[in-house]
Length: 297
View (cartoon, rainbow, N blue to C red):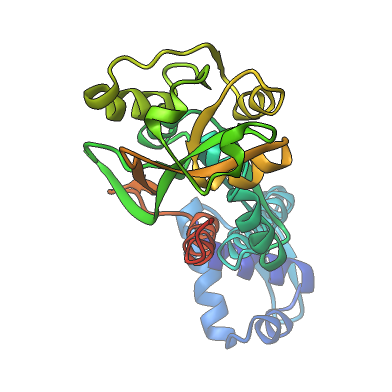
């Protein structure tokens, strides 16, 4: 039993006329008769009785009629649902992004995406970089944004831009008037940073180890906003990716170029190499890449 047969049966059952049903379906009467005959043979019995004057349903035909209506309605609904998803009239996509990106650059891209596809729902997972990789790898999300992984494994990494770390100091600090500060100068102050296993914390410790030894931390937090607020209130200084500059300024801190060493990492999009993206995820991927062509200052 297939959809074509069910549509033919329903049309004849509603019209009680092969001629009218054929017109509705744009089928010749012989073709319609063959379709009904094939359906009856598949099911093992007669569904319609046909005379020169009229057409009527057998008891089995009567039993099939409401089922045929429901099956075809479900089929049509499924077709329409998928059509809307493919044309992005509806749908859902999940994305994981490390906090420094999720709280700064991602909302700009999501605004563009929403303007183009207002009926597509986006679920954002604001998690540390390690969890971004894990969520993409375990197919919990289709898209992930974070630092370039050291080993891609089965992930495809699409770079957005190279981000550098900048110093974050209180507005009333003597360093705030500087155009550039060195790590030696910055680390003379109490240092505030994210807690492990944040990728920001791990990158700082890794890149500073050779020249400056173990990173001495006075205050640590899980949230960048808390780090920025601590700095703004004079508890110390910090270093964050440059995509966080606007956020730090809004919190009342000042950001300055940071050298010696210059710490930078590529930030980009991660997807599973062997996974075909949904239409919604592909559309969001395109918007993210488009918006990344104008990287943060």
